[in-house]
Image (cartoon, rainbow, N blue to C red):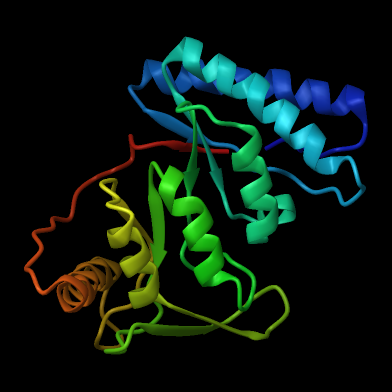
Length: 218
């Protein structure tokens, strides 16, 4: 929704004003955060426009008591360099990150997680298989290329940063084919517990719960 990086100032202003209302909507339903994407533009001033928009929106978020989250979700947030620059310019507890373990560009997953995790408020996890080493691979729908990342590495980065927020499973598959989606989610939870136990040598407690009020995604 909206394009914070857009080059047309009139359209961008309309987008920003439209987005502001969602902080108060989130507050009304007791959601602590909303995610707003950077949008798409690739001229030399695009990052400055995004930073200015995020600052304005984070100020509204503070007034409403709702945090603004940036996710690695394409556009100017597709690469760790752009993410790092956004975070460096916005040192506010009301502007936080929502890393998605599978959304980074190829060969940028580890660097991207290290950039976002210290400011993470929530984290999206995608499980494509249940490999013991944590390696995940899938067909990228946009162009049919194979993408991959290591979930175990991502979880270790979260642990090393003492991340205390939720792990929100956005994609899951059951260990056995042809089983329902709820089974897939439960299998993914167990898989995450197993990987975390290998990293930490401790047992983790986890439950399947409704997190629909965790945040609004725009």
